[in-house]
Image 1 (cartoon, rainbow, N blue to C red):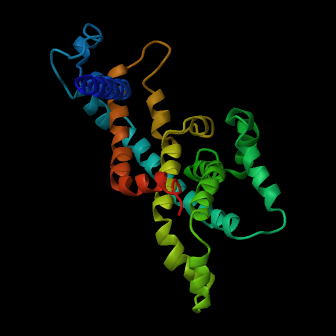
Image 2: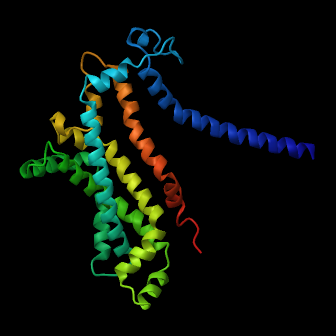
Image 3: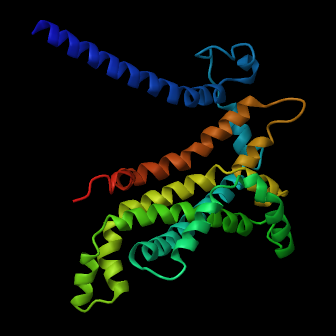
Length: 280
């Protein structure tokens, strides 16, 4: 009996010890980000490797907010990420529902083409996209970023939404249509509420994907008026020096909207990620 208790205790200690290591490994970069952002310049390079600075200062935040275009980059990122998430989720919901509920000619090939688009590295298509967008006048504009982010998010979001719709029995909407409801009404009143966690989870993935993207944001825009915050962070890095303090402060500020967004949707996000795990 005593040996069994000791075995359970050892297993418990190992289990939570490993979990603690993973948590520390995941959160330590965030801690270092905050730590450097509140370390004054006069001791930043002297105590850069210390776990705790000898004094704290918010001078880097004042520099980022008051002496740079960070607020403009911040606004642009919110606009681009928000519209991208909404547009991608709406289109993916419609296409995912169609793939889940209907059998139509060319469905196999459409799905195949969407899968193929996910196989190519983005760097391969940047040149033709830049040429096309330049011809259409979509470079140096937020509209161009929204279009390209939405286009690249739709395939993944569509397959994600299709998996959620596949987990809902067709009998539910068929029963509603027998009672006189149109398919659209059955979708809005029955299917949409059941897939709300999946819709929110999809929107969350699309939002974060657009929020942190830098390749297209850097190559399609050369003006500050249409730049997003990932591009703005590069302004603190030059050939001569790297301004670690302001860069880290800007990074901390950029985390705030994402943290708030996921805090608001966390309940739906957990439900969406676990939806379909158990059917019955």
